[in-house]
Amino acid sequence: MADLREHGNESMSDTINFDEILAHYRADPYDYVDVITPHTGQVRFKVKQGTEVESPSGTWHHIPGTLLYEITRERNKKKITSMTKGVVASLREELEGHFVEAGEKILTIRHPLKKREIIEAILQRVLYLFPAPENAKYFFALDIQSRIEKQGEREVFVRPGDEILTMSLMKRDTPVYYAGEPGIIHSIYFQPGVSVEQGTPLIGICAPEKLPLVQKIINHVKAEWD
Image 1: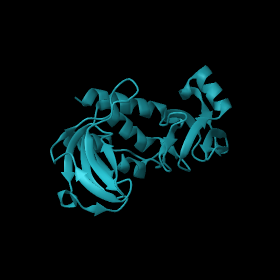
Image 2: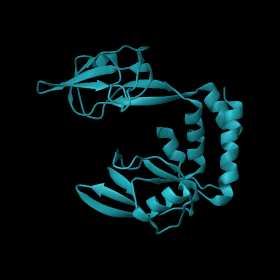
Image 3: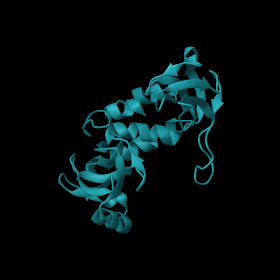
Image 4: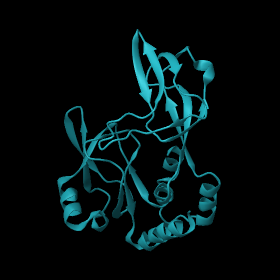
């Protein structure tokens, strides 16, 4: 969620108004996902505003989501399918049949948030988020991976300067050193070997003394959210 990344690196000591945040999600329990063009080309929409769309399905997500539009460049047609379940909230109908530039926002999908997604959204305001330094694939460093397997991720304490990840880019592996607040690895946001965009959170770190606060957040949302 784009708005969450703006708050993710706030200090874990910052005061969070949980009632205000919950009121926000109760009033608008959705995430709004913009769909942009991957390259230049002529656009042909396959959905309308208000169309319900599905995300990829199947055991390995091998069944594509709903076809949103086709974009044609130099007689090469590319089908763009939905990566999100929801409803087409807005669609730029004036672009139908026209050539557009790469990176053009052409529609927005309104995705209904589940309880676990709301919990994670609020946690990202509390945890220290360590972002991906480059567009690349990531793996935990061998020492960190070994400790996670033996102790569990929420028992692994990291400090600034610790080698925590390996970045795989252009067939070269580069160590990634932690730079942030010391604490335990509370949340993992990447899958080993799967490409991650630059700036996307890789892990969420929590100071040990903040664990009761984190659990309070989880319990509060579970109790208050329908």
